[in-house]
Structure formats: C-alpha cells, structure tokens
Length: 135
Image (tube, rainbow, N blue to C red; front, side, top):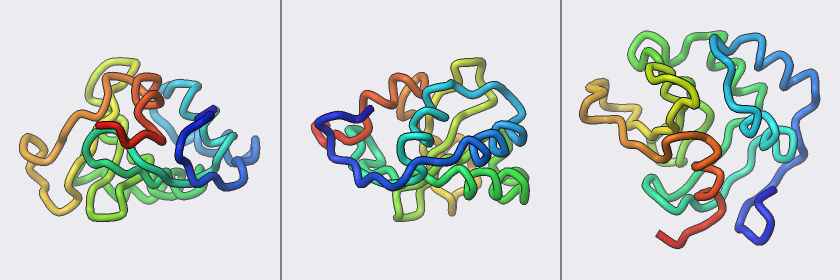
C-alpha cells in the first residue's frame, strides 16, 4: 500500500480502533479506507490534486469527531477523515451515493456550494492520488 510514494507513515490502527470507528459511521465506507488506517493510523503526504496535502486522521480521532458531531451541524453529510493542515478538511461526501466521493472543504466557509471541492469520485480513486505531487 502506497509503495514508492511519499507518505509519512505511522503505526497502523488496531483492529479494536477500526471496529470502534466502523460502529460510529452511518454508512458502509469503502474497505480501502479501513485498510489504509490499518497500514498507517494517521500519517501525511502530498496529494496530486487540491488541497495538495493530506493529513490522515487516526481512527480514534475520526471516531471522536463523529461521536462529538464536530462538523455535523454546519457541514452535514460530510464524514471528515483528515485535513491539509491549513484550514481545509478532507471528507467522504455522504450526501452522495456509494462509493461516496472524497472532497475537501474550507472549514471557515459554511456555504457548502462555495466551500466543497471534489478530490476523487471514490476513495479507491483518491488512493491513486495520495503520496504523489505530480499534479
């Protein structure tokens, strides 16, 4: 996973952390997302499209965000999985149908029409962009 790519890996998530996260997600997210967490529970690296950098949140942090409803009221339907370290979040857009597009949004702009930008039509497609800076 992410072979020959620039990715600052950390130790993978435990099976318990992934199971706890899955129990909080209102839909069946792609298995490739959970496989990435098992490989690297967090970490960061370039992204070949805007916002150009991905800081993947650990399973425990994604679960806490979901449990606390951090983004739920203002950014309804977005399941946040990371950010770019500069004010933009990266999320699954659960307002769409599976396989749920991956999007970025400006956390300071509550106008979703202006704020949301597509990254990839699915997490599997987003995986092809992670760890690459060849825009």
